[in-house]
Image (cartoon, rainbow, N blue to C red; front, side):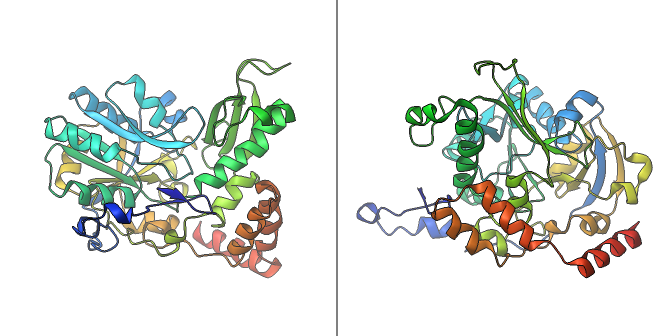
Length: 379
């Protein structure tokens, strides 16, 4: 896998080693696409454990599903930060290990050898819960090339995946150089942040509420004049430069603008998401601490959800789509995306580019008035 100038990884075929078996094409999820599929039913749900729900991005339902699999002697795969704050896929068979997978991470994760590990556990007869983006789930199913009764697949409604390279650069510019001084630069080797002051990152901190979530970074205790786990940055998602670039679609992988896995095409057993708009659909169920939209897609998923103890209510698929169109629609490629990447290559800081271009993308007065009127009508 080689990284391009936008910071995304792509497969590179080693031509001298190729034997023309065609297996890469046989398991390619783009070539071998599934049909769109409606869920069996949908739920609005919340974890009864308030501490877990606050630590989760939405309603904390993934943790309940994962705990069930581990209690049955299974293994859970999910995305976590590594020591350099890059996002990678990993697995755990302990309850303690689940905390690393909890919470949204708005960076494309590296699968690495997770498919191979999952296959090994499945063949050994252990239950496996594999969570990931719809394209990652589709990729795993084709990689395995057969159905496994002991495999549970969980995906989520995906907006699109931002560039790992841009994320790495954003961290370096804002939290390595700025916190430990220019003298640190000599100690930073390639992408490894041995001198990073970071001890905690949350893309979806709920200290100011679920709907007003913040991007939060905390430091470790090695910095001069800093207390242990002190807050380096806490910004509303509408103000943070990385989040603005992500939410305005400026730094998504090119394939996300024509995603082939929306509408249930991934083949997951359960799809999870934030239940945006729950305050309009079922206001009594909303306490601004997070509600999950749960799409049950298969009989296997239904059996699993029946063993989960949570606060849940039946809901409607159309209600979820109304406030979360990403389930069926790809993000629109912004006209300033190329400009973003060009400025990035010229060495301009990520935050400066984001501030400049997202400002240009703001709707004019008439458009803002129309959007406001639409929100009032929706309520």
